[in-house]
Image 1: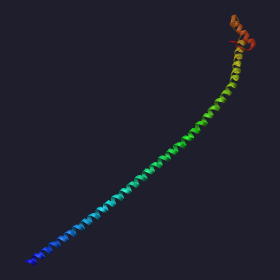
Image 2 (image 1 turned 60 degrees about the vertical axis):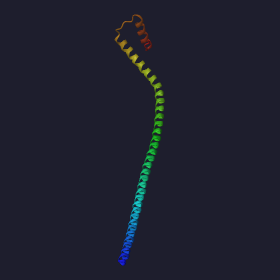
Image 3 (image 1 turned 90 degrees about the vertical axis):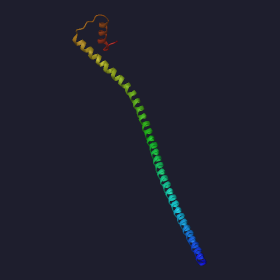
Length: 148
C-alpha cells in the first residue's frame, strides 16, 4: 500500500512535471510564434512605408518637373509676346510713316478726280453759270480745283 502510494505520488509528480514541461514548451512555441508574427508585421509595415515614400517621392518629382516645364513655357511665351509687341510697335511706326505718304497720294488722286469731273462738265457744256455755284464752277475750271 505504501509503495503504491509512493509510486502514485511519483507518477503524479512525473505527470505534473511533464504537464509543466509541456505547458512551458507550448508557452515557448506560442511566444516564438508571436515573435514571428511581430517580425512579419514589422517587415510588412517597413515595406509599406517604403512603398509609400517611393510613391510620394515619384509624385513630388513629377510635380516639380511639371512646375519647371510651366516656368520654361511661361518664359518663352513672355519672350514671344515681347517680340510680338516689338513687331506691333514697328508696324505702327511703318503705318504712321506710310500714312504720310498715302495722304499725299490720296490728295493727288482726289485732285485728278476733280479735274476729270471738271473736264466732263466742260465737254458737255450744258450747265448754268448763274450765282455763287456758277462762280465756283468757273473758278474751278480756271484753277483746276473745286474750292469748298
